[in-house]
Length: 471
Image 1 (tube, rainbow, N blue to C red):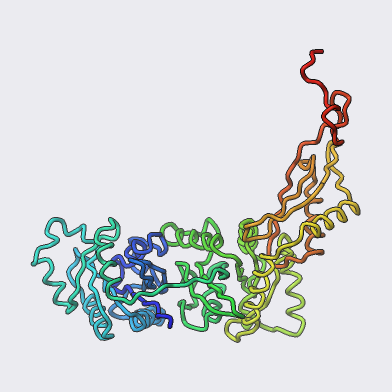
Image 2 (cartoon, helix red, strand yellow):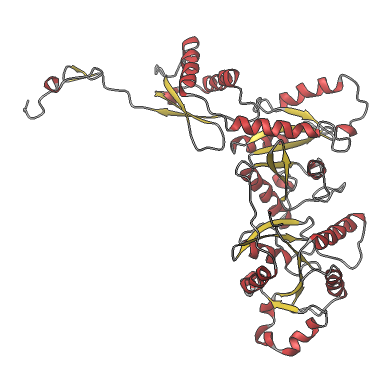
């Protein structure tokens, strides 16, 4: 019988170093860390392995004494849910700051769950030499938490001891990630409905949704099952124009979004149905294409389009296709996360594109296409140099379709002919939803005659020239 993978939740008030602790445990910069309260807004999950034990580590937003508005209230509710679902809770406070009412509230919340609780006194490097003095430890003990560890996440001090103890408190379990897992990144400008779609696809309130730009800052992840496939969803921060990106946390958020493209297999590019002709949307699509990732263009917020009629959809799609003519292979779909329109169809398209990206074509079929294409329409070339395309093979071991075309004088092959090759290839083999990369590799022309001998023919040893004789 499979053992449930334990969940360890990190909770605490804002700016006590929870995300730094999270990153130190994962060994990578997964959560955004900055000297700014409230940086983390969504609950982030990460896999941690310690002493052959796997567990999920959850980083939460900072708990506040009183939620300022409904948006803050949603964040606080999410923290409570994370603590309630955890098997072990890490309460984080600052070493150099007097205990606050918020610290006491966090400790009380954790103890009320009746789960194992560990107090982590972070930023211990600011305590100096008095780190082990009883006078220093006494205030922390008043919180009622028995197990106390002093750490410095920024200096990696006390981290190993803390998680060694954590691993002793939880059962042995292994997180198994499906080898054929599909990573799906949700991308777009701020406030186009990415988190709403993420929640609808995940069928749970994983990310925070609000009618304000810039709600999501980190890459938020969850995994779902569809048609026997495991699909990892990645919700990202909105990508702004370069001049609109603020320094600090928001700049890191954009970098995370670009990183999500690299980590994904397929990207969902959301564009607002009420704001279609945007150059930045085209730029994001271009980045996805250059990265060799699958792409679905989603026209979101269809429910908010006013004065719709039976012909609105048919008029809109050609306009959008004209804006994205450089990715004609990318399918488009109109959705509404509010009404659920076409949302289920997204998963069907994702699985189909994933299968396409892993499709293998026989070399004989590829070369049949190549010779048929070049016979019907030979390449013209430039500067009196005639390009010759001899044969094509599919590269192995790639996550995206890559093909090598060998020939001669290929540097003179006109860009329009390369586009013709791509079009005829897709007409023959499909590959909708994914870029196809062709590598044109020049081979040296064989020297037809040397020393009066035809080197194209197979020669017997007695026909070879005697290189020992001098002229």
